[in-house]
Length: 486
Image 1 (cartoon, rainbow, N blue to C red):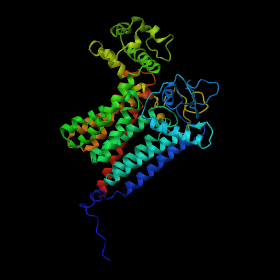
Image 2 (cartoon, helix red, strand yellow):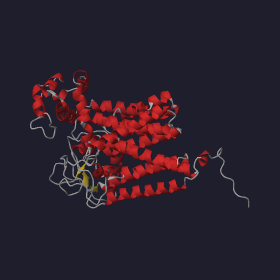
Image 3 (cartoon, helix red, strand yellow):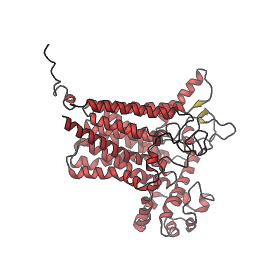
Image 4 (cartoon, helix red, strand yellow):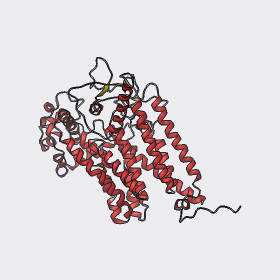
């Protein structure tokens, strides 16, 4: 029998681009298996490991009528000491629902609880179901991305992605969010998926990829109020290279805008809702921005307060937050509830040093990566991650220099790719999107809520920087090995 001919590059173009890809495929599947193992081990840990419950979670579970089961304790009371495992449906007359795309996951879990009750189950439900649902969605999305890259003949990118999922996505800095009701879990999922789909679309745009990218961009823009402009910023990052040298980037750029614009409209409407929670959140955000971030960065806090239209007495509360201010915020700083961020930006012309110092101090406030003011061990008292559970959080510690490096690395890579010219569209897309996430998320978070809980609110930033460093490094090594072998 004559030997079978090799696949024709004309009929199977991917086959022509994949010689020597076998070792990369094996490594990709091993890394994916490691990712799944890490995720499952953390979810199955006893006691429960998750990020403890502060007030933020109530605004989302209120949409479902679901609250922690703690007899004798008000359902809406926070529990920052430790995560809570058991939840039950409870009626609350004054509950206010705050919309987020993460309700796709939370609502699915709640529907499962309702179904279980309808089939004769009890009224108490474990948050592990939500954690398992989120983990399954993340692994499925990762599997789809890897399959698409392999079909396109880019096993180097599939390997790089698998490494990022195993090392970063399934690290406790992220998976501790799975077993709770914070919207950060959804924001992280949609941001990760959006970058992957944009890189795929930059490589080869298909209607399905662009549709998925637009839907995921909508999910990212509606994940948290502070992310309302994020999909548009991601699209803007691709504009210069699309105009200059890389027309392939127009397709993902337009898909990001297509999903980002309706997300912006929805969030703008939500900002105007007239309810008690919206007013409380606005006051808390203004208090944290002015007292924890802006005034401490000023050489003359009293003068800065007056330039913002606030009382000079605000200077006495400089350094506080909504959690530590010793009297009601409006008494500590009269007028703070009505502060406009547009007016704060006006300080750029009069006090650029104040704003510069405020932002320059932000990277150090992103650490530790796992917030140390929230317990992570069920039944503990602000207990840290157990020593036998590995995490990148210990590597970074409080080393501000590492935070600076992670935030600026993708920006440096993006500028280098632009200046060298003839860079591949997927590489430009990856670097541009990672740089945008790493730079804009902390800035928006500081302007939104100051330094209060910045590590949690700007969680996407360190993820973006670390993902770019690891992903670009693995892809480069895999490509170089491929060239030497073939």
